[in-house]
Length: 509
Ligand code: ATP
Ligand code: ZN
Ligand code: MG
Ligand code: MG
Ligand code: MG
Image 1 (cartoon, rainbow, N blue to C red):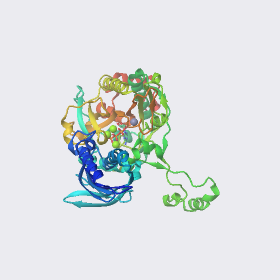
Image 2: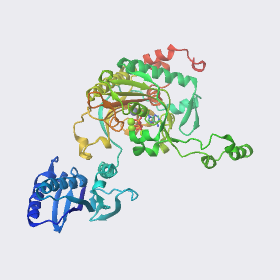
Image 3: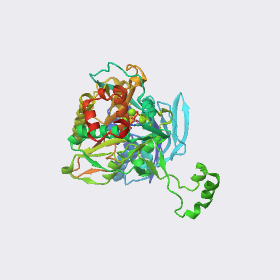
Image 4: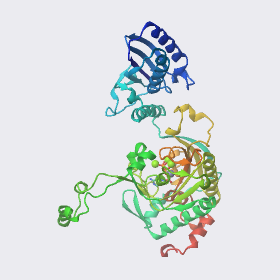
């Protein structure tokens, strides 16, 4: 991505020969040194391509790179001119304007013409070209402009990333390999035996016997992995104001799979008379009619389940002595619109999970993650005896360079990113085919992805990171049943102990 533009700097009096000589030298200095500061490669720096002087106006053609961008370059040029010419000639800069700004992209990206400063998008020599409107000095300093530039950069990065949401690199596979794969789909069995009943697409009622198994599994996970590490239970809200989703980034990243909630327009029941009368007589409710009585959505339903944790610490100064903070929440469901991907209870629009969250200094956050990782491994190997694998899945926004070659390098897991746990589902087909594996859980380190927008501060000014891990209860149970079947004699011993610990529901005892 390259920016080109014409910078017009208007002085408060005409420039004489002596001043022009100085300007020539200052431009040399800018090109040789000042416009390169803070960069490593030529394509990151800015440079002055040509310039001319008309009485009191200096007209400069600039080209800027990925680090010293048009705003930064323009202000650096202004500073150098003002601080050198000002005191010497008693001359001031009256006006600064950047014209004909073009952003030349390497990839094809689309961007809304409704955005401020975006004038036009064209293609020239097969390259995408974004034309921006005239930028005055205060525009260049506006956060809106800086965010626009960041958006364009991110879009290009994403385009280079190949349109994929994440890159997948295997870290480890279980030693355990299932010898006698079961070909039946446990989702189907659960429905056939009446343990679950579908209420609407991707939403189920779990009857007591299945709830019993799920509770045993949750308790086992908490006892084996979560509690020994000192995590404490909290209760998080399950519908969140839109502002929270703006800060976590979910609204910008996954809006297509989020669900929203609206408040009624009025609390006065008499205002609903027409609608109520219609239902009374017709015995039906038209969603379009109902919508007329509702305000636009102001909440989104729990998506990642850890959103309230970051919100809780918003604008707080966290004392070192309480770090790392280690909590978990299992107080309610998460909601996701999964469109065509819905299947059984393993991919639903309403699911349950134990969400483990932590906050601390980078080394603390990494340490907690590593201990959790050990716990998960032990849980999968020794407690549940599963065939599993784990992978490093770099979401595109964590990848610094955005190049696909990066995939080849040795992975360093002590940086922000995600580890997925997957279980083979034999009913789907051979283990060699990736589509026959199911993500059952994951652990992420976010770096400052959340502490920055929520302005979470450390009392001694140190950097704070967060981490989270989601244990999808339906998914773990399906993995277990898909690999072990429904014969209790084939279930892992500890799980059976937990199942037996509380009285069995009538139907399966
Ligand atoms: P997938 O890649 O399968 O779509 P995800 O990466 O979107 O899953 P996360 O956002 O990482 O899922 O959520 C954490 C955990 O929550 C998952 O590992 C999984 O156990 C569970 N989970 C996510 N989506 C669903 C769903 N639609 N139905 C049931 N469980 C889910
Ligand atoms: Zn989370
Ligand atoms: Mg998903
Ligand atoms: Mg995933
Ligand atoms: Mg995931």
